[in-house]
Image (cartoon, rainbow, N blue to C red):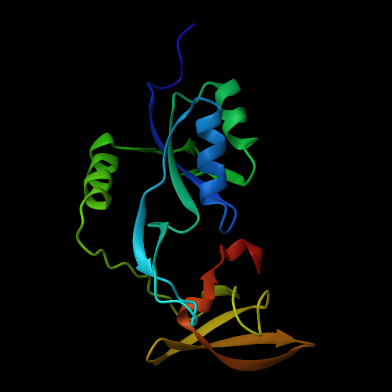
Length: 174
């Protein structure tokens, strides 16, 4: 019996900050997985060291042929959420794209990443006094600060937080 697809790369969405746990879990299951990491300065005020962080927060790559048993085994990995795709199922990532990322993170050059939030994007505060609070991105204030609207009891309150302290949420969570 043939497999639905040849073995190819797919993007696996993980729980927030579970990328390494999922990667190690897949490796222990003898699956081919790739978690691209880059070196960045630690954001902790008491440290000035370089740390390795995932290039794509909340995502890693896994190579599979999508046979049902292996697909289920991938999703049963602690911290795994789902394979990224569309209504027809998971969408493969070309080998060339994954190889380019491997070359990118394999070099010693500094890599700058970023995301651009759009007005109305759902976000969650992940650090600081508002940790765990969900809200809606309003605007950038400059110097790494942004404004988030938080609804409570039918009213909105705006808070000013560091861009590094928020993560974008899938729109279905709000």
